[in-house]
Image (tube, rainbow, N blue to C red; front, side, top):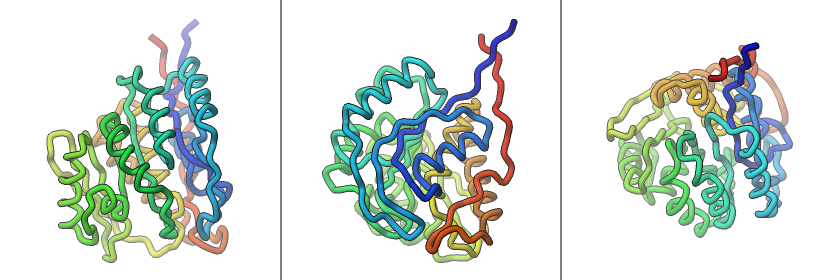
Length: 277
């Protein structure tokens, strides 16, 4: 009898009790795209659609054991890393993943919440730059996060390009600079790839506040498409198309009093069955 496996994506991320961002958004996205989601919890933020009220840490040993337990049993085809809010957390994740260099890693540098709340301290940012950026196959900063990483102002498309070039010097392979905070009718995101070539992606801005968790969703979508065997460019393009439609089909829904979530299940896919070799 033939045996099969699902393309598997591991999300290493923080919690969101309101269900729109973090590990909840990741699992929804991975599942909606037809992949199998596993997860490692890194932090317990207390938040809703209006903002983050507190962050409770998960013990470092608990994170290490979660990672070990998943990796010894369900080795993923791609990994998404989200909220890592302490230097110790960065260190243990990098240490536990060092033997899995063949697995593509998507890192969403969660540093600033949609509400504008800064989520991590300077020491953690420095550790991320030193240890985590070099092992990631792609990072997906928004304009605020690009400004933090590049130490420059990022408000225009030209400034996004300059920031990308500075971030590339931090040993990043691929950088997707997200343009969702642009104050224009069209949103332009930029992919700076391994060959230092820019690719632009343009979408019409959707009039809605329901964008809570869009960054988590995008990075998880890219990881899912990489798990399916897509190229980096294809994964980025398809991931952005998925997020655009998830925002579009959830634009008129009222969930909570603040920035509502996306509609992750606007077109859910069945789990993909790949024949095992």
